[in-house]
Length: 270
Image 1 (cartoon, rainbow, N blue to C red):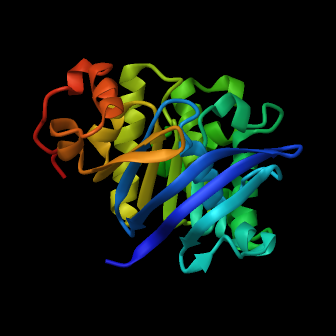
Image 2: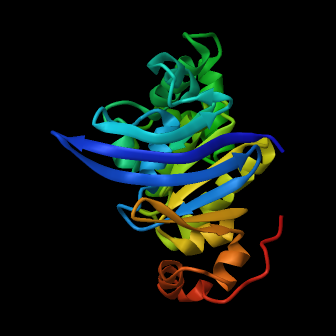
Image 3: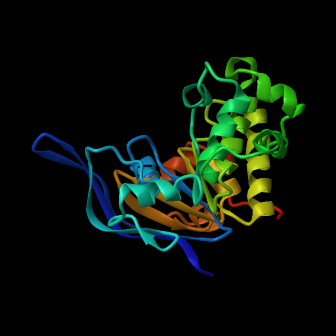
């Protein structure tokens, strides 16, 4: 199976004056088309830095110190900003962590989704309003016409998260990166959002990268799990391998912090 993402010995540091702080060191992995991969680790482990590198969204203070990052055949370590912009939205869609920060509170939902569609298509086009409604329906929102007219504060947390998924799908990407997509939601809504996202990914045959601190979410949803600590990849395997035979104390600590996932479980039904 061809790899959509190839990361080879990646190193990323942040500059502050003459000092460099290494954030990612010697990280390597791949992600195949149609695969779901989870990167797990505590805050500061480097997982979001890796995701931002894939999106071409590293801040100006970040420097690639080693390795290569190839997205859909494009080596981003050598790519121009124009190439990175073309990959964002069309090849990789992002579902960010906090809808109240990511959505514009002064714009209606439909306007924000339409903007993503127009950026993906390269200009305003006839039928954009219909496409907004279709995306809202695809992500499981009732009465899409009404939802498109509403503002973010008029929707529940789960509804706002679905809007972010709709925006991520607007460019018909080959990969969705979900960065802590349900951390602000209660358990019941979290499960519904993850179920729906998983179903959309399966129906479209696209890849999913979940960035999370929750080993339980990773083990339950991913085909493979990567565990990061202090910028390094410390564990890598199927959920069953990582849960049943962790090789690192850090992974065992994550498992201990999620008792419901401490014992190996049968794989989820497809």
